[in-house]
Length: 503
Image (cartoon, rainbow, N blue to C red):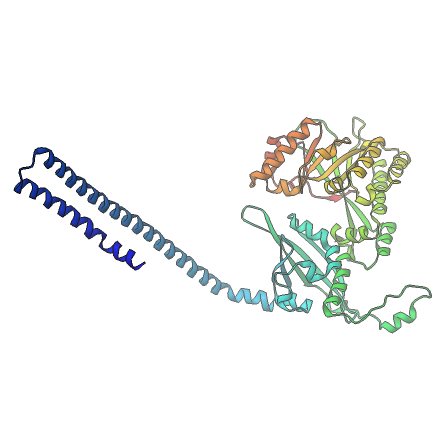
């Protein structure tokens, strides 16, 4: 290494000395000898070549020095710009530090930020104290680990809705460890990036209990004494504060503790049916009206509980077939009292069916008897089968679709393209509509990949004779682009908001 450094240092001197020596030899040969013209020309050529080589080397060194100076200047400018941005960011942080401190330490609202992977990226002191956990047990931990597997399973639908870009909010009653009842207002607010993609959601919990609303429950021994003979009595052992929170928060989310309350709500008519318009995008087609049926559960003080709050419990206890039959029967009864259109046709109502209903062998017979009982056309119903069920149990879905079509009703595949786009699964039976998943429709104006998916689905659907419905349509710009692509129908707040079916 030392020899190389010395050689690198003296190399320019060696080159210069070589040129001088060559010139001296040439002068000596001309002056002191009588060499012929050929030798003089040869030595002159060598001298010129040496001079040109030295000039080339010097020019290359100058060029490298200029290039490196330019790079150094660019790096210096970048460093100055980054230093300026860092100072500006530090100034902004210093300005907002009191506000952040207020959010972290003083604000009573419980706040947590959950990313698309389900991990907690932020939480404030109120949320931490509510859980009775240390910060390292919350930060960067999955919501399943924070709340427990049971409560995570119960709120999975609401979490999925939030990560799909839908805000969720509801009010519920929560039983505290001391037996007191409190009212909480819970909100899930989706967070979007600059390109419109969902990056997570904020979970906000507010205590809205009025002073007179707190009602401590009776002591445990009184409850035990009042229990009827033969009735199952739950046994509670000593649990951690976290488990106590999970139990009470579970009741808060789903509203009730066991399946009997959901069954009673179905039998007592505590559910209310809403409908949302599915509008054709091509004018002058003369098609009948289409609506999707939505189910809401009446909560406390006539407040509406979102589906994500009661569907998981109904699915867990196998009550979805019972609820789906209730929906079909009540929609059929309502349709039977309505006037038909001028051409004698009635509107088509899209009804979502659960996986348990698809596997229920008695549902097609129930549907046929219901149509006969109320005397309504079978085309009044179009049953939506989730794309996930189609992918997981294609044989069951194909058999269910065949029996439903034998009754005269129509079939739609909902959330199509959410995980993957596959038309092979619907080859075994006929489908009337493909409802393109809202995650594709919501971002396709900003995301060329989603635009390509949307266009591909529409092109293939037209070739096989299936009509397309775009979900989660929010604005006029989206509607205009969907018309340009050739989508048949659109559904979302940009078309119509849900309204009670009875209106």
